[in-house]
Image 1: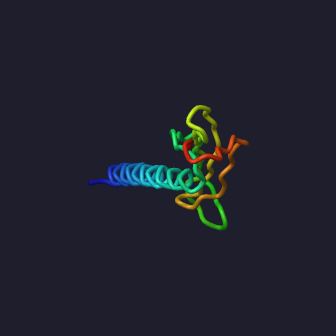
Image 2: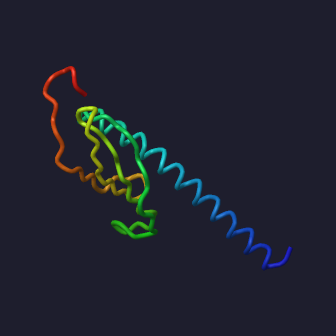
Length: 107
Protein backbone atom coordinates (compact mmCIF):
# COMPACT_ATOMS: atom_id res chain seq x y z
CA UNK A 1 0.00 0.00 0.00
CA UNK A 2 1.54 3.29 -1.03
CA UNK A 3 1.12 6.75 0.51
CA UNK A 4 -1.60 7.86 -1.94
CA UNK A 5 -3.82 4.90 -1.03
CA UNK A 6 -3.31 5.53 2.68
CA UNK A 7 -4.29 9.19 2.27
CA UNK A 8 -7.38 8.28 0.24
CA UNK A 9 -8.39 5.71 2.85
CA UNK A 10 -7.83 8.23 5.66
CA UNK A 11 -9.94 10.88 3.89
CA UNK A 12 -12.70 8.32 3.33
CA UNK A 13 -12.68 7.34 7.01
CA UNK A 14 -12.85 11.01 8.09
CA UNK A 15 -15.81 11.65 5.76
CA UNK A 16 -17.70 8.60 7.06
CA UNK A 17 -17.02 9.53 10.71
CA UNK A 18 -18.21 13.12 10.13
CA UNK A 19 -21.36 11.89 8.37
CA UNK A 20 -22.02 9.61 11.33
CA UNK A 21 -21.47 12.53 13.73
CA UNK A 22 -23.91 14.73 11.79
CA UNK A 23 -26.55 11.98 11.97
CA UNK A 24 -25.96 11.66 15.73
CA UNK A 25 -26.38 15.41 16.19
CA UNK A 26 -29.55 15.37 14.05
CA UNK A 27 -31.08 12.62 16.20
CA UNK A 28 -30.18 14.55 19.35
CA UNK A 29 -31.77 17.72 17.94
CA UNK A 30 -35.02 15.92 17.12
CA UNK A 31 -35.19 14.68 20.73
CA UNK A 32 -34.30 18.15 22.04
CA UNK A 33 -36.98 19.76 19.85
CA UNK A 34 -39.62 17.30 21.04
CA UNK A 35 -38.70 17.94 24.68
CA UNK A 36 -38.65 21.70 24.13
CA UNK A 37 -42.10 21.63 22.55
CA UNK A 38 -43.52 19.44 25.32
CA UNK A 39 -42.04 21.72 28.00
CA UNK A 40 -43.61 24.81 26.43
CA UNK A 41 -46.94 23.07 25.63
CA UNK A 42 -46.38 23.18 21.88
CA UNK A 43 -47.12 20.56 19.25
CA UNK A 44 -43.94 19.45 17.46
CA UNK A 45 -44.41 19.19 13.69
CA UNK A 46 -40.98 18.87 12.07
CA UNK A 47 -37.32 19.82 12.17
CA UNK A 48 -35.19 20.53 9.08
CA UNK A 49 -31.52 21.44 8.89
CA UNK A 50 -31.07 24.72 7.02
CA UNK A 51 -27.35 25.47 7.40
CA UNK A 52 -24.21 23.47 8.15
CA UNK A 53 -20.75 24.90 8.75
CA UNK A 54 -17.55 23.97 10.56
CA UNK A 55 -16.73 26.73 13.07
CA UNK A 56 -15.07 27.60 16.33
CA UNK A 57 -17.34 28.28 19.31
CA UNK A 58 -15.81 29.02 22.71
CA UNK A 59 -12.45 27.73 21.48
CA UNK A 60 -13.79 24.43 20.14
CA UNK A 61 -13.99 23.47 16.46
CA UNK A 62 -17.17 21.57 15.62
CA UNK A 63 -20.22 21.59 13.37
CA UNK A 64 -22.45 24.64 13.71
CA UNK A 65 -25.93 23.71 12.55
CA UNK A 66 -29.08 25.75 12.03
CA UNK A 67 -32.50 24.10 12.04
CA UNK A 68 -35.99 25.24 11.19
CA UNK A 69 -38.45 24.03 13.83
CA UNK A 70 -42.09 23.85 12.79
CA UNK A 71 -44.60 23.76 15.62
CA UNK A 72 -48.18 24.61 16.52
CA UNK A 73 -49.59 26.08 19.69
CA UNK A 74 -53.26 25.38 19.04
CA UNK A 75 -53.27 22.50 16.54
CA UNK A 76 -54.44 24.75 13.70
CA UNK A 77 -51.82 27.41 13.03
CA UNK A 78 -48.27 26.46 12.07
CA UNK A 79 -45.23 28.49 13.11
CA UNK A 80 -41.53 28.22 12.21
CA UNK A 81 -38.68 28.98 14.59
CA UNK A 82 -34.91 28.60 14.45
CA UNK A 83 -32.58 26.47 16.56
CA UNK A 84 -28.80 26.90 16.32
CA UNK A 85 -26.42 24.32 17.78
CA UNK A 86 -22.70 23.80 17.98
CA UNK A 87 -22.32 20.05 17.97
CA UNK A 88 -24.80 18.78 20.56
CA UNK A 89 -24.76 22.08 22.46
CA UNK A 90 -27.81 24.25 21.74
CA UNK A 91 -26.73 27.87 21.30
CA UNK A 92 -30.11 29.51 20.71
CA UNK A 93 -33.80 28.86 20.19
CA UNK A 94 -35.76 31.64 18.51
CA UNK A 95 -39.51 31.33 18.12
CA UNK A 96 -41.90 33.84 16.60
CA UNK A 97 -44.81 35.15 18.68
CA UNK A 98 -47.51 32.48 18.79
CA UNK A 99 -50.99 32.16 20.20
CA UNK A 100 -51.15 30.70 23.70
CA UNK A 101 -54.07 28.36 24.31
CA UNK A 102 -55.39 28.71 27.86
CA UNK A 103 -57.93 25.88 28.03
CA UNK A 104 -56.93 22.26 28.60
CA UNK A 105 -58.81 21.07 25.49
CA UNK A 106 -56.35 22.74 23.13
CA UNK A 107 -52.71 21.70 22.87
